[in-house]
Amino acid sequence: MRVGVLRAATRPVDRPLVDVSEIGADAKGECQPASVWIKASRLHPLIPHETERWKSYYRQRTAVERELGRLKTGWGLTPLRIRRLLRVALHVDLTILSQLADALARTA
Image 1: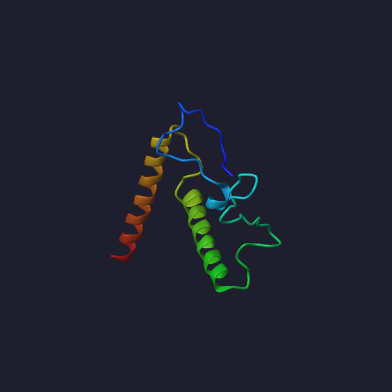
Image 2 (image 1 turned 45 degrees about the vertical axis):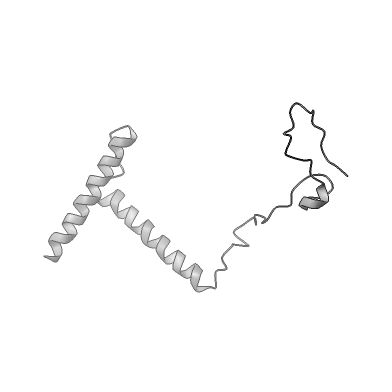
């Protein structure tokens, strides 16, 4: 059984029509997905809480949140009085640079 009806003017000459059974599609002409998204929830997380992988991710997350809190409260990133993305990025970069310089000064 041949699939598709094309006019002779629009169909390339060297390209024949393909049978559905040859390409492995189902009868409706739809493809089967290679993978399916799994819906995550708080009760059923994608990474179980008992594993070392989850503990590692959680340790990294808490370290990042702790450092962002220090930057906001101790280094003045909360009260931004500037606008535009480039200026905010410059302000954040200079703040982190000053924090690193302060840490280097303490160790030396």
